[in-house]
Length: 176
Ligand SMILES: *[C@@H]1O[C@H](CO)[C@@H](O)[C@H](O)[C@H]1NC(C)=O
View 1 (cartoon, rainbow, N blue to C red):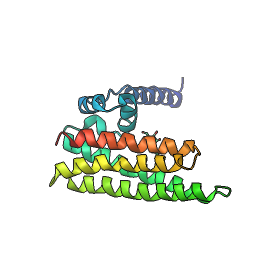
View 2 (view 1 turned 135 degrees about the vertical axis):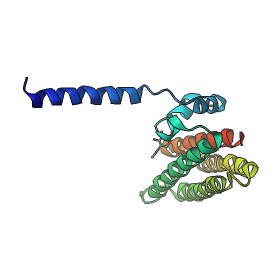
View 3 (view 1 turned 60 degrees about the vertical axis):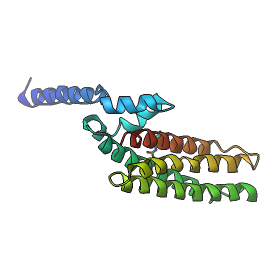
View 4 (view 1 turned 30 degrees about the vertical axis):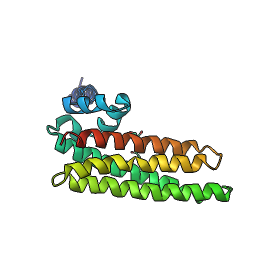
């Protein structure tokens, strides 16, 4: 074996070891404790765990900040997704109206998560309330679509994400 091959093999093995140790990283105790309190612990873990910051976080305050940032990013992505549905032809006017209502509900939800993030230090009680009401956007959107007599699975999925992040944000800010 020449030294180049040797070097290649050693670095491959090292890389696999590193990848593997990352995959095996257990969620931090804080994350485990919070997720246990949510209505869907496995979904809570898969929402928080991929963010590498959550493995080393040591205070509820810092975990709240990370979770609310994830909530804002995820809900903004959902809002864009739902907005783009307005471009597709063939939706009847009632459904279009319901989808527009979802876009506004999501705008309000993003605003609530942002407020919660800004209030973490000065007013944790209001932050807790805002994280909770962000979830109303999902219920509002879901009810509006249902009232048209149609089901739009991709929107329902986004509503589930929003409820999940609201639940997580609420449970964490409840500890501050
Ligand atoms: C939003 O969050 C859900 C639930 O954790 C996840 O499955 C989905 O991939 C996220 N979407 C984006 C764009 O991050």
